[in-house]
Amino acid sequence: MAVETAITERAQPAGPLLSFWRAFRQNRGAVIGLIIVSIVIVVAIFAPFFAPHDPIEQFRGFAKLPPAFVSGGDIRFPLGTDAVGRDILSRIIYGARISLFIGMAVMLVSAFIGVGLGLLAAAVGGIVDVIIIRIMDLIVAVPSLVLAILIIAVIGPNLTNTIIAVTIVYLPRYVRLVRASALAELSKDYVIAAKVAGVGKFRLMIVNVLPNCMAPLIVQGALGVSDAILEAAGLGFLGLGAQPPFAEWGVMLADSREFILSAPWIVTFPGLAILITVLNINLMGDGLRDALDPRLRRS
Image (cartoon, rainbow, N blue to C red; front, side, top):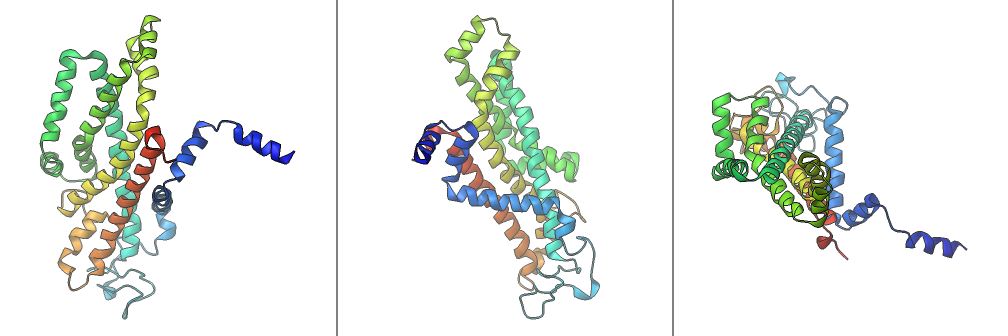
């Protein structure tokens, strides 16, 4: 009886979420990436509970203190202190908040605007499509960091303007992706049937076309978070992103570059934080791509 029940349960088709998870977990790197990214998010959200000190508090007698596991370190400062005596571990933990916030904000705003412009270009076509695509081509023609620096130079360096600049830089990815996906969907039978049934163009694009464009959009969104974190860190390193005393990872690298030889731990740990976070977000994005695209699913 138990064997028959097990066979019956196994024969029942799995739901979409269960099927997605089964496909996702086949990629071990993606699962590891998901775990590590989840840990980073939890630590960032509950930073006051995990950080041993205030990120801007200066311990004057402990400037450039080495990590606790190195001779001369202090257990109260597990990763050491920077040039003005601030705890590096606390600054990295609080910096995760800012970096993840920038990455998520850029992704959400870019996706929202990109979906709107991409669907508009695909639905209307003609001169509207040409104008939108030519503007996106113009943005893509300029190297991303150069364009971000140009925008920051015009509107001024701060956290909000960093998000605006990086959003503009990565907007063409979402517009082009949604437009291409929407144009592919508009030629399918179910869309033609909906048009014949009298479905309005706005409802057609939002209710019928957009849901079928979500799979590549989700993957692009996941990968876009890591790109935005890197871009923001680059701007922070150049002094054009988040401004002191914010504990942003790029700002931490900029403040510590002169101590690469004399106190290498000051620059090493923020760099590792960027590397680990971006790498695991990309691994998770690869897993999402494999799970959402049936052609890439592993047997």
